[in-house]
Image (tube, rainbow, N blue to C red; front, side):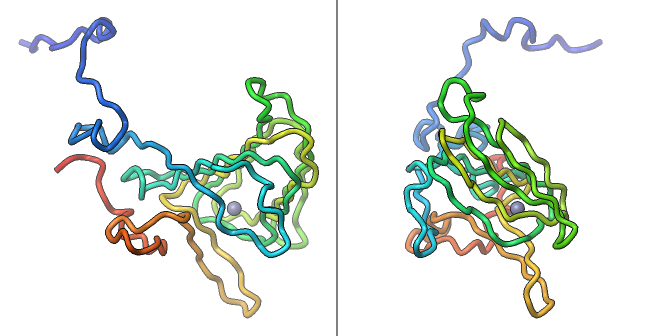
Length: 213
Ligand SMILES: [Zn+2]
């Protein structure tokens, strides 16, 4: 004898479930509360000397991965570029896939696109450069060298997502002395365990669980 289902799945739309706002107080100790995260407003903190600070609209949104939603194997930027900017000059690779997504940001039409962005895939002399002048998605498989990435012409705003299938943003860099270095960056946020300390990407918080104890 099979048990009667508690809900008719086809009729859930009529059900009146417990509702939560997404603030910390709103979520309280809700079962799925750690899976719903309010994006904080961020301001780009790394601008090299001589570079324009207003190449991107502020504030920006970034999803910082597992430090914000426990167990996440994904992180992404959500930036709107409004001026030409050489974003990434150094070739590198990642331990997991990365997707680069370019859309027009003259909302609501994401196909209203007027920019020229150059992106290089491949290692050293085997590289190829692609000119992005239309809404585009690029997959960079794990281990494949890529960059530079240069926003050469930005005549209309461009929404750019750099989405890595990793719990925290980071890459593997070949150093001039022949060694490789893995570098991680988790944004200008404070440490989850010590509010007085800036996050140093130690990775300790990446092992939290989304399930309530
Ligand atoms: Zn990359």
